Amino acid sequence: MVIRIDYTNVMAETIGERDGILREELLSFRHFVIETHARIQKEKERKFYFAKLPYQDTQEIKEFAKEISERFDYFVLIGIGGSSLGAQMLFESLKSINHNIYDRPKFFIMDNVDPDKFSSILEIIDIEKTCFNVVSKSGSTVETIANFAIVLDILKKRLGERWNEHLVFTTDPEKGFLKRFGEENNIKILHVPPKVGGRFSVLSPVGIFPAAVLGIDIDQLLEGAKKMDLVCSIEEHVEHNPAYLIAITHYIANMRRGKTISVMMPYSEKLSSFVDWYRQLWAESLGKDGLGQTPVKALGTVDQHSQIQLYRDGLRDKIITFIQVERRAEDFKIPDEIPEDIHYLSGHTLHEILNKELLGTKAALIKSKVPNITISMDKISPYNIGMLIYLYEMATGFSGYLYKINPFDQPAVEEGKNFTYALMGREGYSQKLEEFEELYKEKYKIEIQ
Ligand SMILES: O=P(O)(O)OC[C@H]1O[C@H](O)[C@H](O)[C@@H](O)[C@@H]1O
Image 1 (cartoon, rainbow, N blue to C red):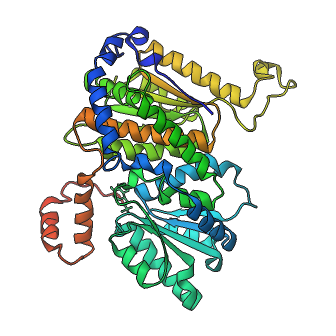
Image 2 (image 1 turned 90 degrees about the horizontal axis):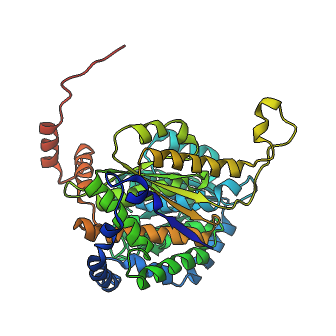
């Protein structure tokens, strides 16, 4: 199992000093790194508690997950943001493409409050054979509670007294509606450690319980995260610590070279939702006090045919991270007997073309002096995904010190939620409603019928 990080193409040596980073500049963070490293080690009992998750005992979770996967044919996760993106990423990277019609339980996520999505899931599942895992750290997120409330009603109507046997809650052990309701109604409750925030919780029961139900090897996942924790705990040198390296290169690119956008572009369909998980982590953690870097999702090769024109020739505001997979479980060769005009492809495989296209794209970006980093892994495995998850969690936590902001809160998200509560008529929000009416006008409009 191996992960490589190639940062040649962010260096000034490759793309020049206007866009690239000087080695001296990287090394000038030495003292900062040593100081911050010591602080992080101490913070692992508090703010950096996510770093403890790889060391948890998984026995109980695995046993319970086995029971659930044997009892049910459908497993529906109700949750949003940090309570769904991690599980979705684990499912899509480690399962989905191999997921065939015989695999069970079938997995669905109810995150949005979109009636079309809701009905499309209800059409497929059989309530009698479905387990609903309601995941919410706070236990009060509107979307999650709304979807749950409808599901609850359906369960009660369809299953009578057995309704609670089809529910598993994952929530804060100390507070919140789900905790109270779960305890009152004898519903199985899994705990999100109170010190771990949603977007850092994928290696807690929030992500590993659904993963275990779906047959993913969660011990290997945690082993990979442990390995990355070990490397990041030992290495104090920026050129040897992958998390600090990612954080500092992105910080310099952003604050000193104007790269306000961080594109992540895996050359792998399976890793596409890793980027969705990363986007929340990077955006909510670092987008504060007028600072931050906008994370953007792209997919190789598909977005070569849609975005690369802009990345090469548009505003010089991007740093790109490619993710490459070196080996695939299955590959397809282009046969010898193909029309003469396209014969140059004969004997090559799809995997090979994918990786050659990545090389071609990187060369083109170097030519346009667009900084880019490549993370390659030998294969997509729970161990490697565990490493990658921890790498980005630590890079994000460390970046908090660089930007001098708290990467573990998200105060700006609350405002929109409060206006929504006011609009939904929630008690105690009448002043918010007044503020909304003051702020929100639809004054300039065009309507076409
Ligand atoms: O897990 P929950 O409490 O339901 O929260 C779900 C999501 O809600 C919020 O909007 C936060 O900004 C996210 O960080 C969080 O992951």
